[in-house]
Image 1 (cartoon, rainbow, N blue to C red):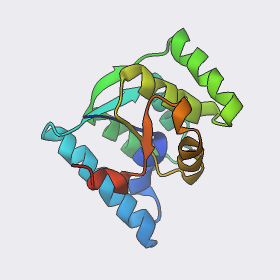
Image 2: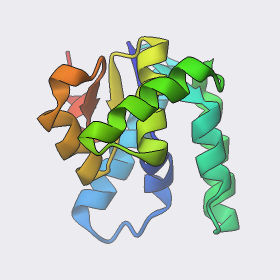
Image 3: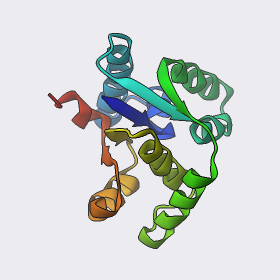
Amino acid sequence: MLLYLDSCCFNRPFDDLSQIRVRLEAEAVEWILEESRSGRFTIVTSDYLSLELLRNPDPAKRAGSLAMIGYAGLHVTVCESVARRAAEFESILIRGFDALHVAAAEAAGCDYLVTTDDGLLKKSQRHSSQLMVSVLNPIDIISLP
């Protein structure tokens, strides 16, 4: 199963874990990464993800999240077709890096794009017929067969 984790997921383990939802999502992300080592999942990353993670102003969070992308088994490079597809998402209000992540996940043939971003989750549910990848929260991945 191919999973594209967006930057929110890679940053989640470094967020304030005092809130139960944040802690559960962080644990789910760590579980997904561990399961990728056993071959259950293949983690997909992209140049867009790397660029977004590099923009994190906190050096410790930036280093930690960049280290976690080492779990990736597949990488999508910058290409015109991904940029064109991302531009198509403007009409459904998926913009910026979110649009690039969805387009990269589609280009890689991912089964799921995984995010903790409630806005992206709502938009993707509302416009699921226009996306070629399903968008889920990391906690939802745990319950998949």
